[in-house]
Length: 57
Image (cartoon, rainbow, N blue to C red; front, side, top):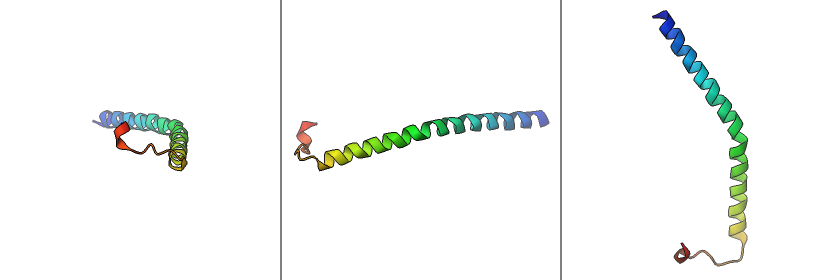
């Protein structure tokens, strides 16, 4: 029973380490993507075109 608990704790620890590394690695990709998307929306909002009608979709 003791080794089963130790095994479960070890598996959870490894899983959290992998998830933490993925989050740390992908954090800046998410930040850059959000900034680029925000700049795109700002550009579209400030452009003078009247392409806001729903018929084009």
